[in-house]
Amino acid sequence: MIRAQFDLALPGFLLQASIDIPASGVTALFGPSGSGKTTLLRCLAGLEHAAGGFLQVDTQTWQDDSKKIFLPVHQRSLGFVFQEPSLFEHCSVRRNLEFGYRRTPVAQRKMPWQRTVDLLDVGPLLHRMPESLSGGERQRVAIARAVLAGPKLMLMDEPLAALDTVRKQEILPFLERLHRELSIPVLYVSHHIDEVARLADHLVLLRAGRVIASGPLMQMLARLDLPTAHDEDAGVVIETRVATRDQRYHLNELDFSGGQIHVARDSLTPGQPVRLRIQARDVSLALADHHDSSILNRFPATVVEIAAASNPANVMVLLDAGGTALLARITHRSLDQLHIGVGSRVWAQVKAVALME
Image (cartoon, rainbow, N blue to C red; front, side, top):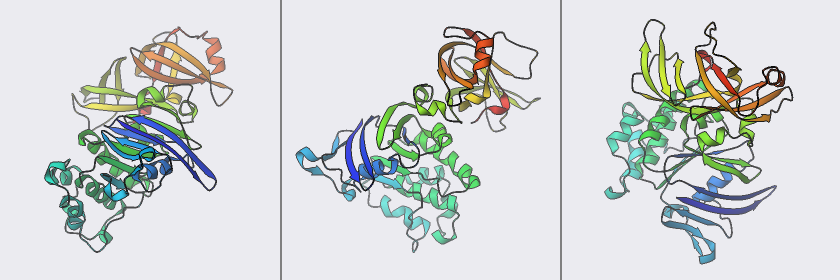
């Protein structure tokens, strides 16, 4: 478990944050610009000293001002990846990677050299100098270097922010691989919900320097009392597994607790786990299962909660589809015309082309 409590006053900004999160998986620090994400990360790294603060990582106390404990940055077992990769420009990629790896005792190394190189596909880059790398390549090298240093905690401060859309889509699969195989906890700062939905297990939601909610990602995204459920791109994340591949129509059938869902993806194989994001704007509701519709994905569901949306013409509907939470944004008029209320049995409909991986 990672436990932290920081109160830090900066010019024009006050951070008052308390977190209690798992010491495994990826925890996203999420919120709009100016909410305190990077400041909180700097406190965790020891780059900012919040007087009276407390930080415990697993069984080690890194800060406890009541006992006059404050480990400086170089004594904290950290891997730090910034927006701009801070590589040693005078060293080859290999020497950049060896910098932390050779200084880490064998017993403390979290991942073997070759496995890290393969996982982030930096083998072909080892002989090159940083100046010859693209933005995505530089960031992969920076992440590999941080992993090879064997940290107890990885901090990533918007590592994709400096990349264009093409480079961002290029590096996301590498971060997903790292997520699956890395045994150390990662704190990932972002204000892009699509990144969070793809990578995170746990979500810490910040607003104006305060933590307003914290919990497992899938539960948090389905909560109608949180701002994330009322953003334009509000939606949920569901875990599925590939069942079959329809070669004729180039569709995959994925199983989840609410039934089957069809997606158009070329790179999936039977048995493969797949995380899908379903946006509320792409979910419509019906009172019966319409087989004379072009919408392939239809699931029986129960209405759990209804809340006002940011647009007064709409409402947000929380659904339970066989134990999986879904969100639907529909008009208030449709809600009344269909006589939908809490406890209503409905059919949730999602276009196959609307699903996001």
